[in-house]
Length: 280
Image 1 (cartoon, one colour):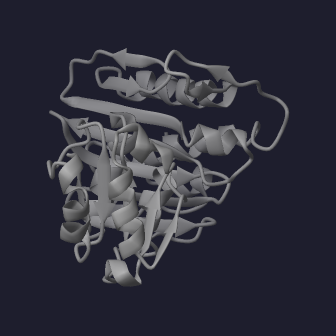
Image 2 (tube, one colour):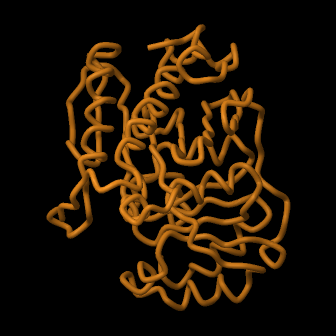
């Protein structure tokens, strides 16, 4: 997996300060997310795949499987002692302190529909603390990545990565995002959605990993997941926080294991949590 010569395979150079981070794990996460994400483009907007329903009725395709398999195979070679948690193939137990949490296609429904707002997510966790993360949007060729203490970095269409940060806009001036409105109803929280939509300048469902990328790069003020799994959020938390924002579950805990998530700039966070207060 490339490190100091990452530009050869990625199209851009990983900032030097990040190359050796966590014994090269962040650089590997970036390269793996891009390689896996690009593999999904072989299927995107084609008829080469069928849709299978999993036990929870969520969809999965050959593109999801191939992308996660690619990441797992490379990790077995690069970091054979690290644990892995992936959406499609579950847990691999490890003996090192590190765990990789992977969502090969976050936004499979968008992918199936030919909408380019799906992402590949790779997070690195130690003792349930999210240390680093990558959000890659293959169809748009946008990427944002971060590691604790090293900032959040953004690149589009292979431009050199630059530091990114959340906005300073209020909710009344801002963009409120979620992945799917009916997930608020599924947890009995339609009133929370209504409050946030009423307070925000504009509301859109540009959600999943892309929504958090928009928050981290200052293009949206809040992204809310009423229902979420660790693989939806592990990559997200360090990115939003290193970009100067706030991330928590609906109860205010700094965790990706609470079953839901909120990512926002620091200006709107308290207002958002108040809007969610009677459905925590």
